[in-house]
Length: 345
Image (cartoon, rainbow, N blue to C red):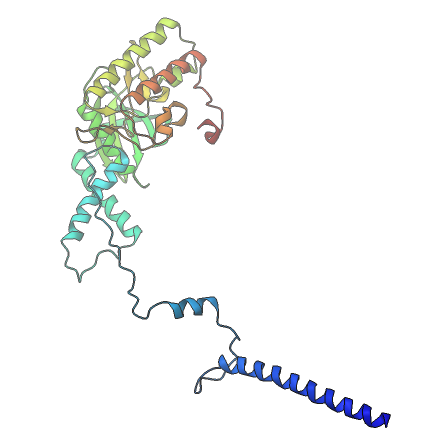
């Protein structure tokens, strides 16, 4: 009797458990069928049981979604006439932009590589430089070359002018680096058009085997930097140098020219006491339309704060640099000149 009861109980539990198992198995299979691949899809790995987030977003997006509109680049604004290096590059590129604007749509010029664009700019600058310099062979005119010093843009030599018998200074600048043609044009144009007792006198210029030869008057006292390395200046001498430099800067500023690299290396002196500004490769020519600059150029120890920060500035930055030269004449060197450049800034 007891055995029959136990058998009946086991049968009831077996049927109940089977029903529970079948119910959950049905739910599981139904969930799998709902997300199975449609008939005819290629065989492969089984799809996930739930769609990914990207798929859900794709299903929610409308089918007639429009593609994003193409943003065409705005034409570059032509910069006013300027002698600083950056504006010189923009002026050199202007003819290329004009030619591109007149080209038919099917003849696209936007595919030019940066190297090709740079080559075009250099060719434009070199063409302009050739129109400024003199023709002829300067090695027949000048002789007895003696190196006086070297700088960031080339070397300076003392030479003898065979036609006059006078000594001249010749600055040789290599034209192999980017922007060198623009710097050369800057220096020639400003020196040629700036005749003043406190500006070094421009004599002539030539292109010789990839170099620019810039001939100017010879200052037998050398640079102010050389003088400070040899002697200590008295207060009256410091005042005289500052007065002569201020007169030269006043002349430049009256012609809307900023020197932008006033320092002892770029101030020449003579044994007769004359003091003259030199090295105009980094100067900038202002215009009525453009009365400020913003390019950060110059030598860090002598640069005004607004030049270092890249803010708009005018001719007053030259006065700051001359003030640093005044400290240089008193102390023998510019403030913080021995500090690393990053810390100096």
